[in-house]
Image 1 (spheres, rainbow, N blue to C red):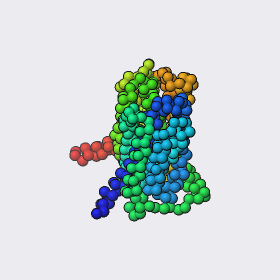
Image 2 (cartoon, helix red, strand yellow):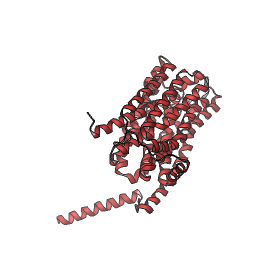
Image 3 (cartoon, helix red, strand yellow):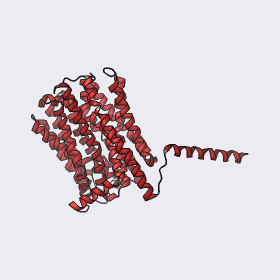
Image 4 (tube, helix red, strand yellow):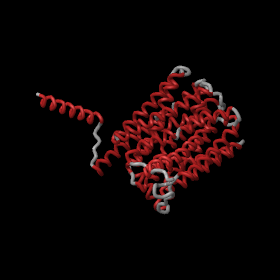
Length: 448
């Protein structure tokens, strides 16, 4: 018996979402195993950071090529390929006992991860009505972060119990399972199991990337993703657990609980932001700026706290960081609304570069600063992390500059092409208050 169209759409989305959950598990697994990796491979902080930076560099560098391949070959083939490549990387890491094997493994994880998220996002507008797309985009990004829970709890438990090889082989096995689920359930569109676009050539590649990049709305999406996502990614992917354990003196169990809270906050925040974006599409940048301010304010409180911060303050930090992932999804909504459907994969790839470039730069800078202060040992003090983590404010300043500039350009383009004028919020609120007052006066006059 065939599924009803609505149930079929949810089944397709669930299969893609499962693949993304495992991609996030694979992406964040090294962060949870960071201290174990330092001992296993006998490396310092900067070398360990280089593993994550290389993984993110591969991920970010492949976003635009993957976007072009997505427009050409569709979601199904890319999701399946990505899951298999990541499973191979995790299996290799399970048995690696030297730097070379670990490097190759993280390259494979980064490459497979690059194929997954934007391919799952591409499914949403094909299977659901346009009015649901902003909310489902948020849900895709946020529910996918359950992969961080899998790395923070069961993967961490396997590392502490059976050990390194069992932990990473389990992750590889999960990748094989979601591959089978994707093969069974995924369809690119309701009409076709697999879609094919125009052949990719250098001329079309250059034209698609150039058209996507030239629109300031795409660049606004990139800078939005850059600034909202990076600090949470740095925390979850690499330096959160070392910061909480070695810097703040928490136990591994408490650190894992805080990482789980980070994910849960994101899951709760995502639908709210999705509904707000759906209702107030012309005020998306205000949401973005508010999230950036919340993240930076929380980090300032923790880093300026004398000595180690108390647990309630660290909880506040994690709650603030949890909003960054949902905030970064607004960048993809810019890509969707400012680009035609045939260029959506390319534009989404351009946007997705932003947060991961910011993340890899920050991860490497934090590692270099820690090594400079400790001489390459893992004997960290809270003062070392206080200096190293402060580099995030410099990266955020670059991102905020990009947001403010491209927001102005995108609004100008919107006015020129569609005649839509976005008035300052204070003006719009004043007009609304004036209209409400006028209606109230008219109603009173009518009663008289």
